[in-house]
Amino acid sequence: MDAIRDPKTLEIAVLQDWHVVDAPIATRQKLVSIKVGEIWAGQDYRIPVKLIVPVDRKAKGFHLTGGHSPAKLEKESRLDPLEQELIKGDIGLVYTVVQEPGTYGQHALGHESEERFGRSLNPHHKIQYWAWPATLMRAITTAQAETGHFAPGKIAVSGYSKNGASPSMAILHDTRMTAVHAGASPIWDSPLRRCDTDARKLHEANGGSQRGFSGGHFGPNFNQALLDAGHTWEDLQRFTRDIADEVFISRQLTALRTRGVDMLFHPGTHDMVAFDLAWGGAHHPDIPVYLGANTGHGKKGHPQLERDEQNKNAFLLNHFFGAVEPLLSPPGVETEFQGDTLKVTVRFKPNSGEETGRIWWMLDRAPDGSPNYIRELIPDENSEAMTHDAKRGVWTASIRPATNASRIDFFTNHRKTIHHGARAYVTYLSCPYTRVTRN
Image (cartoon, rainbow, N blue to C red; front, side):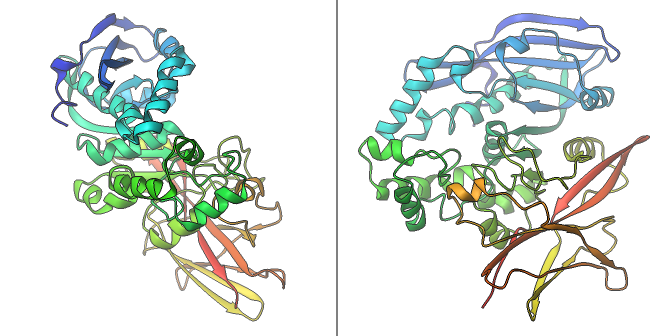
């Protein structure tokens, strides 16, 4: 981290110096190229970084994202409504590139990275484990070196897919980061991610193909590539065990909460890298998640999906500026069979301010990590509004499963409206994903 934080090693090349961009909310912008580091000896990893601050004053902290391309960063950045709110509140913006190198003409680099990792199992050689998280950290160093334009403040990181996984890993190591909002990305170190016996059985049942099988570690499955390179299942288990503390939010919750880090995750209920929701819900029910029904890479969502959800906006505004109302915290869940009916009770802390409740369920969902776990969606009819018992302060629902169903997976979503200035933002939080087995 000393090297990551050292601006003298950035080898900055100025592509566009500070200049004013006129718009309804005017800004000053600068584009540079930086050296993230050497991904292996003699191979530099360089990435562009764009810095955006208020037009006439310093930014106090910033929002960092990696979901950009080099070509996009060369153009003047026009701000969306959230970014305008941040700039008006003296929060800067830092954009960088966390993408597959092949998407911007570096196919050889991406290929060589995978080949070296396959031979060595050295995570520094794999872009996913080293280059992408390091890119975000080095972008922070780049901004903080601009002392004439950035003042100390909070640093929130957000993104989807690789741009959700990368900040979720980086924030474990970089104490300058103060918040993470991540979607369609790993959160916890379930046995499947550690290449346990069930992962091996699923892999073999799928003919060794990576298509459809989702039992990878910190992203898409790399098991077959490593086996083809001569490694054994025991090698995979050793690697995933040894690196788990370095990559998974679930392994560092105490440290993150001691630092006061804000967190919110949108894993998706049918995503190729979120294939272990029941394990996470059972072992980490206190991690805040929003489960968009039938969402994930390439998924359109359930007909009852909360299309008015504005979680990221409310999360970031709340983190940087505070609000009258805090966002919801994970509730507790109780279940009880009464005959053939499963009774579900969800309880928030008193005065949490939740406004609605809705439940979704699946019967005998396919095994975690299997192709059908992703392919088979929540049926349209498997959702209904919950009942609020004001006297007990709980939300209740009943599920009457088919008589031949042995397992019931369910989760509930709850709305709370958050205000910032004159605007209202609709947020949703889920109860822990829960799996109940009938006797």
